[in-house]
Length: 465
Image 1 (tube, helix red, strand yellow):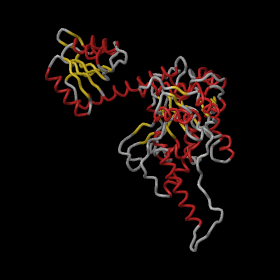
Image 2: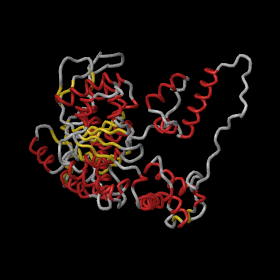
Image 3: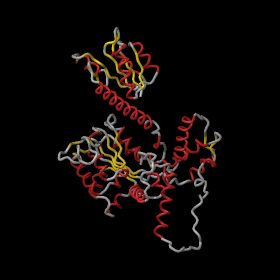
Image 4: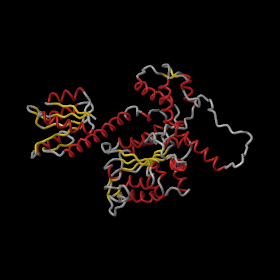
């Protein structure tokens, strides 16, 4: 992260440079208003720390210049003690915050950290708005009637406070819908906080959602607000809601009804304002009948349901999506002439894509990355798309049972091999490995622990559903 320090006193510039460099920031220095504006216009700056008085110049002018650049940094102004009027003027002009001299080092470092967090959130929202505008980029590319209906519903629902349940197969873009609901609402300036309910055990999930107090459990060394509270007026996205344990479902139902949370280990309830959006790739009605999901919680969640169609039902969208993803790869790889051949397009159109849009994106990225020429023919696509069956494990026609044979041990060894193979195929991403084996994440995690594989390095689970 790049911090620009603006002060007409050399000693103060050097002091702040040492202080911030030790924290790990890249620091640039400017001794006057003109030098600061030149730095702002010539290099990307994330946070500006400027004195209000800069000899003949002013920190307010630096603030105005910072606000004018394409990706404006957050600005923290340093004021002399006892000048509240100047501080108020700075806040009105768009400063993130101010700090008075003499200041505490830890307070200043915390202020910079918070300013960076705000800028990161603002930049993320800006990029998402850009991707969702116009042609509704990313996973929204397409002209099928099915997706037009989905987009129309999102536009209607986004401004409301209503809880939304997003359903659809894995890879259809459920998190993108949740982000679209957030960004097209009045909450767009507040945080969007996703939680993968399947990736956390019961105790950790409750602490993550509701928070905890100091001493609530081993390792709880201080009070911590849960996501529902810390999201403020933003949106909390509960991904894979169907994997929440029944005991936690009871608490979540009460929380959604009362709009209040009780942190783990506390006897006091705290109100929250965030909107809740949930998603699942399961049929929750079936889960209710099986006794794995509470019916009353289902009614509370699916006030409005957005059902995402699988890619195989989005007639005409496959080619549009493939070309959209290829355009992104052209830019990323610096290969402006990459194109699909007509034969490759036909192969893509014929395939059912069980992994939906996510699978298509991965296929396009792989083909573009490994392509030897600018024309991506059928040979650049996986064999499964071309109708070629991948070799399957062979089972001997005549089964032999050696002395001391144990079916249970044999099955355990086979299960372990498939678990390891799935982890290797998914490059350590456990949610993807679970999908490859047709298992729920909870079942997959249980089997990993059973075979002593739970400490394997994880490549990081994707946020999207």
